[in-house]
Length: 285
Length: 122
Ligand code: SF4
Ligand code: SF4
Image (cartoon, rainbow over all chains, first blue to last red; front, side, top):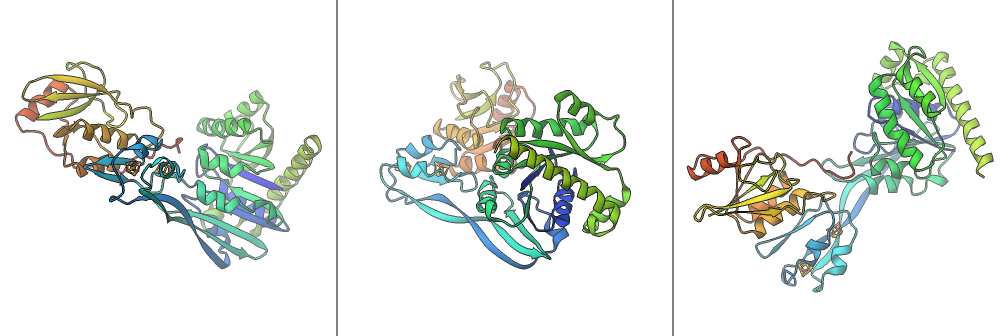
C-alpha cells in the first residue's frame, strides 16, 4: 500500500510518523518528498547511496536571431522573460519549463538547455529502501524532483510511505497523487486545527481516503478531536504526549527500535492502515 | 525627467502602495511639465513573477527613476539592466516623496529582498 503522510506545517511529527511506520513494516520504502527540507535521512542514515541529478529545461536566447517582437515575453504566464534595451532577460529560476516561448518565437531564437535544480538520492537502511529528494535553495518549484521520486512508485517494495512537503501547495498535490491513503498528522491545539483544515481540504478535493493521527495527545478534550467529530473525519490513532519520544526523535533515533512501548503504538497505526486500505479496496476496487 | 511610483488609487493626493509588483496603479510624474498620469499595473494579478512584469512596464514607460518602498531582486535586475535608478520612499504620501525627489533628498533603495516566490502559496 502507498501511504502519504501530510501536515499543514512542518514540525508536527510528519517525519517521525513516516520513519517509524517504514521501520516497523516488514518490507518498506520511505520517500522524502519534503524536498526543501528533507530530514528522513538523518534517521535512516542510508548506505550504498546512488545520486541522480534532476534537470529541467529552460530557454536560452541567441540575440543575433532575436528581432525583439516580444511574443515570448507576452506568452510566458510565469513572467520569466523581460525585454530590456534590445536584449532578452531570462529568469531561469522562475521558468516552469513549459516550452511555450520556444514554440511562439517566430525567429527560432530560443533554444532549449538543461540545468540542474536538485538531486535524488537512493540508498538502503537495513531492509528499507530510502529515497530522498533535494531541491537547491532559491529554486521556485520542487515538482520536477517529486515527479522523479514518484515516477516508479508502483514498483517500489513493500509498504510505501511518502513524507510530504508541509502545507497544501502543488508539491503536496504531486506527492499524494498515487497514494492509497492519506494520513493527516495534527497537534491537538487551535493552531493545529487550522493546519489540519488545510490538508483536509486538499485530500477532500482529490477524494483520497484519509484519517487523522493526533500527535502529542493529552486527552480527548481538544479542538482537533472536536473538528474531526464535526467534519466526520476518522481519528485513526493518537500518539500520547511524551518528552522521551521528543528526545529520541531529536537525537536522530528511530523510536520503534528504542522499546516495546513505541513498537506497540506504531504497530497499531500500521494495523489500522491495513484495515482502512483494505476496506477502501473492497468498496472501490 | 520622468519618475514612476506604485500607488493605491488614481490620485496624486493618495498613498504609495507598499508592494511594487502587486500595486494596482503606477503614477508617472513628469518633473518638467508637472503632469501626472496613471497606468494600470497589469502585472498585479499575475500568478508569479509579478515583479518582473511590473518592472518591464516601468522600463517600457521610459522613466528615469522608480520610487518605491520595496523591490524584489528579479524586478531590480530588470530595472537596473535599463539603467533606471530605484529610490526609497520616505513615507506613504505621494506628494511628500515627489517633493523630496525634486530636492534631491531621496536615497537609493539598498535593501533589495530576494523575492517571495508567489507560486500557489507555499
Ligand atoms: S519555457 Fe515556459 S515558463 Fe519557461 S520561459 Fe518559456 S514560456 Fe516561460
Ligand atoms: S519571440 Fe523570439 S524573436 Fe521575439 S522577442 Fe522572443 S526570442 Fe526574440
